[in-house]
Amino acid sequence: MSIPVRIISIKIFSEFMISILFSIRQWLRITLSLIYLSCIAFLSLLPSKDFPQLPMFAGADKVVHTVMYMGLTILACWSMHAESKHKWYFLVFLFAVSWGITMEIFQFIMHQGRSFEVFDIVANSIGALIGLSIYYFLSLLKHRINPTRGR
Image (cartoon, rainbow, N blue to C red; front, side, top):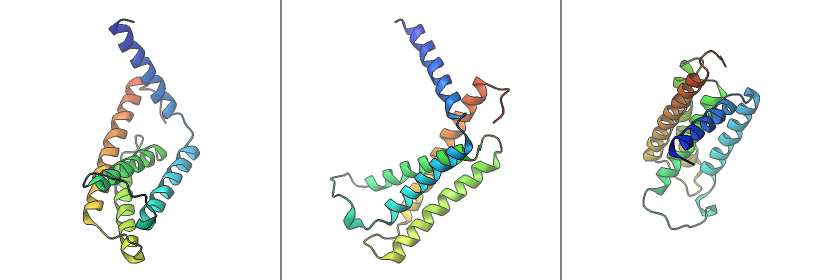
């Protein structure tokens, strides 16, 4: 297969995947987001002794926080059709950061081997910003593929 044919194939595949992504019904989007949110709460509040002791580099938990909140923000934007009303981007970001702060406060209150860390909140916020950027980029691609179609 030549390079131009591969590029066209990748373009067609990505357009197909984006059209499928944005055609999923909202109730399913919201359900998936709530399940993901529940997983974040569970993992955030699980006592530290219940986590497997894996060798990791310093700061690996900040990478985990960033990725978890990036996923949360992408799912929340997707659930709320943020591309249709741009105020949703701000509200989703505010929600993600508030959720992260709430989880940190609960960790502090529960005394289960977990602690309140400001840098976890920073990592969560960075993840939320990255998630917003990714979702915004995907919504631009969606609009480029089918500019006349609404939600």
